[in-house]
Amino acid sequence: MTLKHQLSSVRHLRVGRFLFCLLPLTLSLACHRPDKPVQLLGQAQGSYYSIQYFDPLQRDLKPQIDSLLAAFDQSASLWIDSSLLRRLNANLTDSLDPVLDSLLLYSLYMHQYTGGAFDCRVGRLVQAWGFSFRERSEPDIPTLNRLRDAAQASVSIYNGRLVKANPDTELDFNAIAQGYASDLVGRLFDSLGIHSYLVDIGGEVVARGTKADGKPWIVGIERPAADSLSTPVVQTAIALRDAAVVTSGSYRKYYERDGLRYSHTIDPSTGRPVQHTLLSVSVADSSAWLADAMATAYMVMGLDRARQFIEFHPNAPGTGAVYFIYDDHGTLKEYETESFKELRIKGK
Image (cartoon, rainbow, N blue to C red; front, side, top):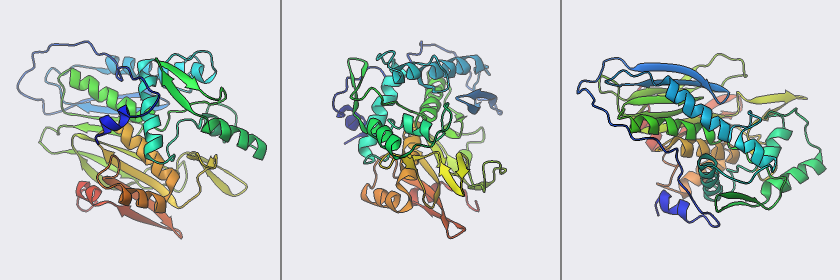
């Protein structure tokens, strides 16, 4: 069964159009592609973006990209008070726009597909453990149980509206949003007749086509750092063409208390930050949103469960090209699938 058919089988959902409607634009393109790409830098979703693209017309598309990402944040950001997601979580509305409709549909599918490892309902748990816009207040046992109950209550979509079984349930799409945004920018380029580009939004990367010399895009995978202030170091590099890659790790977003390190990745089954030896997961797949969600799910599972999941789901979405970096008694070690090995640059 294809991913499209699997998505359509999610119960209680009535799906509208997933993507922004982009106005058609007819262009007369020159046959010769420029030797150098247009390069854009900017900020989005509390992070950065770095974009390169080959355009025969050499257009500066930064205004369109900034506008697209700003509109996306108005829908899905937890850091903007007036965003639709903040209003949904506060029960001020139940109306979904196309962006949140898509994000929720994809998230519900990924929850089922990963056996609950991926879960967008952990919003209040993320806040309670100090990884959101609210002040940190580590939950006691009764509070933790109450928040976990809210995070396990059902949510669904009906006629374009969010239906929550528990009004205290709050959604958090941070584990899929940047990947989805990278896909959206890629679709913008496609609509404009630009078919060679590299989009990087906060580390969620989408590559299409090749560079001017016909070679694939090169993307570095960061070595897990000792702490959040360490200078980034490339662990390995891969060649990417017509694919996306996303890395999720526990070594940048965390805090320490009483000698313990609390990861920003929350295990939905316990309501607590994960604590295991898996430090970094990189997933390459056709879509950045899917790679983003799977990388998070593997971080929740831990090394052993994640490897079992891959072995039990051969040729399934998000299980082909996967790369783990883990801590083996103080030594960094790697595990990678055969498909990921094929992407790696020799000597890297």
